[in-house]
Length: 297
Image (cartoon, rainbow, N blue to C red; front, side, top):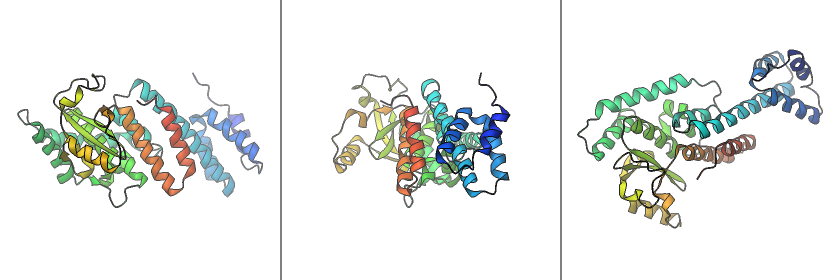
């Protein structure tokens, strides 16, 4: 079990935080990161009591580094032990920008959406009718939509913000749709396309992630695009999309992917967003998150 950090050591480290020597600061920062979350309250108190701009900036940077380290470890653990829980992975990513986010509120919001969809579903519905019912609740009643006008905004990749604003990017809208569908035993799976993300409706709940690679295609009834309000389309439309991107169709473009791949893609999208905004430190942190995930197929 990790030992509680020594108060005397913490106070000594805090006195060094305004040292103009960057080398000393970097050593202090490294030590704080090693000590981890138990030092956060001390750092926050020091920040509140400091009127030195340099010291405040340094404390903010250390707090951010500790949080990044915590998320990296949690993402690794999730990818190895709990990767069947998609929401957990997405909530960890959202904690990067919103460290104090209320997980309970997120789960409650999604549960309410799920309940509304459940009320619309009946056992004798066709696959198409089930998708139309989900589309009705998400895109008509609740007005979820793709954020076309501000496509690269980082907020589009954070589950808490997507639930509040009702706008998101392809990966987050697909993740929300997929989670609700799977919870209600509707066999919808993620399809990781280049520069896009969509869903496939399969004719049963066979284990398609480990299934014989060439065999799953006959099980796909149709594809769904949550970014376009649940638009339904066929494989020839994906072929056309790949042709426009000047890409040769490969099996992976039609094969259901796992949740680790989805969270990896979510982080990938955030990297693009922050690169466009010029936030190099955030990009570095996100690259570390990707490395923390177990190797993605």
